Length: 217
Image (cartoon, rainbow, N blue to C red; front, top):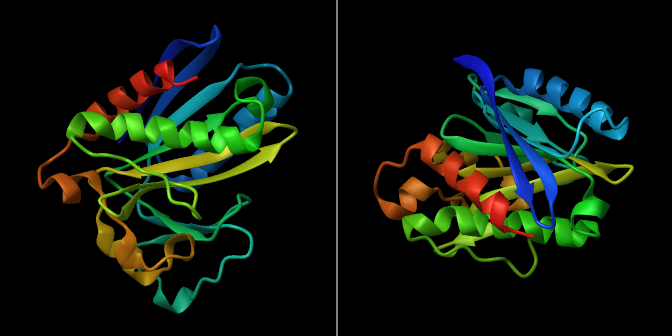
């Protein structure tokens, strides 16, 4: 159910404030419209750097160059083309999605460091649950236990980023079975709950994510 946005302001090193806005549970297309509006506002200087947190109903999104067989899409999953890089991926309940609308050049210096920054945040976020996040030598994102726990796909316009990352917390992994998420075999995907074998509350992971953002340069 949608609720009023929760807003936090982080004094991000080196004293660059980051707003964190929690949209709650929101259909992907509505969140995408909000994201594009926020991108326009950031480009125009009407807002500062902001990270939007959200949880989506079942949806497959696919970026430029993806190879999606629509015949395999389950009936309860929305299908949406997007302007980010990367292939097809799944968003759904139990997954923490974050959309950073930030000045990449001012925050991290370049796009490569920006991607590594997001990976660092995810690695720090999952650590309190006893999970060791790792980078993959050839794929952007975060792995744990030899499987992929978080995906990253961004677009940049005039050095301002949009789209972002998705961390599988209590995600129903069966929905990855109909696709090749970011070009990978579906069985490579995992979640925090699957790896720990216990129930994990998404709100707790959101709180840890915000703490991790405040620590990472």
